[in-house]
Length: 354
Image (cartoon, rainbow, N blue to C red):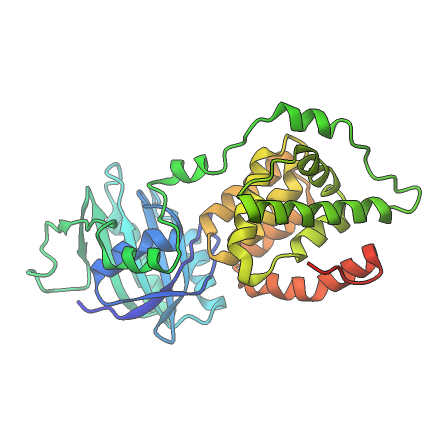
């Protein structure tokens, strides 16, 4: 069965869709299977992946753990996200766990709900024990009942084109993704943090806020040069000052779209090295960057780290709501364009050249 559409990198983890820029054109189910890991950031298993087409492009893709039992509320939530994004058609790839005996009930319920709500099903693939087949294709030479071996991602055309475009290779599984954001303990940075005074809000805080904003600019410059910042005093100062909302908003607003990969790498490194009590601000900013890039799986895990550090952190709670509602990533670019000049005025009484 032929499938020709442009797919953007996106993922839904814990019922939250994300969006990103288009990737290579897909011409077959084989291409779709090879593209899914690039869309969600890791090679899925025991998962249900739902994608929504608009104007022949996948505008939103969502991943959830494959339900062990039929959950109509969960299906309704998936379809709600399709409606909110004005989706026209749907694609489904089901990675069925060996422990689930009635997967067909879940897939049938989802398919019927999609059709009932006006979302024709363009393709529905199932993957079981390393083999795949289409539930829509009736050509047994193409899609035999026993399925075909799952294609290798590494040798696929999709992978070659994505890597050539600078896209990272997807993680092997969710555990490898989580390993990429495991904390790094640095006792020296923790000791330096203990020597840095917090901002005194009883007097004019702008001098210390400027100190934090300027420290972040220096940090980014160092990181861009070496892929790491070796100045531990500078790192500690950034982490302490980012607890201030103005400095945090300055940091979030400083992202340049053309250098988003640099900021992605820098924020991830900074979050990993941040000690407990200093994680929530940087993790929240990093989660927004992940979401904007289409790294929905990573955005969710990073946001979890922020809330574990501070379960009431306002920005993390706001991001959780935005992710759950499936807001388009453009919202973060709009927020930066609106807020950053105001933050610069508040801290510097004028913009800061970066």
